[in-house]
Amino acid sequence: MSLLGNIIWLIFGGFLAGLGYILGGLAMCLTIIGIPFGIQSIKLGAASMAPFGKTLESDDESAGCLYIVFNLLWLVLFGWEIALVHLTSAGILAITIVGIPFALQHIKLIPLALFPFGMHLR
Image 1 (cartoon, one colour):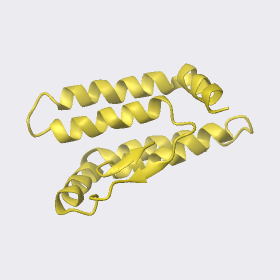
Image 2 (cartoon, rainbow, N blue to C red):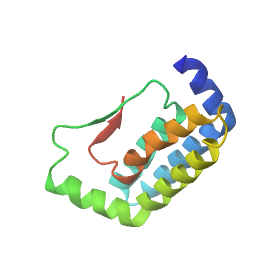
Image 3 (cartoon, rainbow, N blue to C red):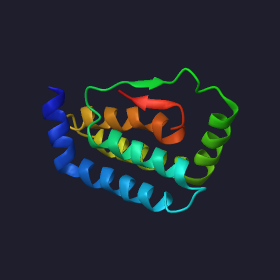
């Protein structure tokens, strides 16, 4: 069932959203300071390509000082906008019964969009 959900997800915007995250991540990787943020953006793009059948997990070392600082920087610079887009998309999709599973996938991506350092979608 998750394969069918991922195929429909890709056709109706998941591919373009993931590609946007990946291209933005590659642009951020052009500077040395942007490399950690670019890698997280690429990770978010890969996660948004096929979210069905995956769960959100945190790393063991995700409570380190560097993770906290990077997550706060990400939240202020990029995270809240991405999370707001996922929340808006989830609200629009939840209006119809057919869109509810896709709305749940957008809601699943919100914590990853807010605090990507130390989290993975597996």
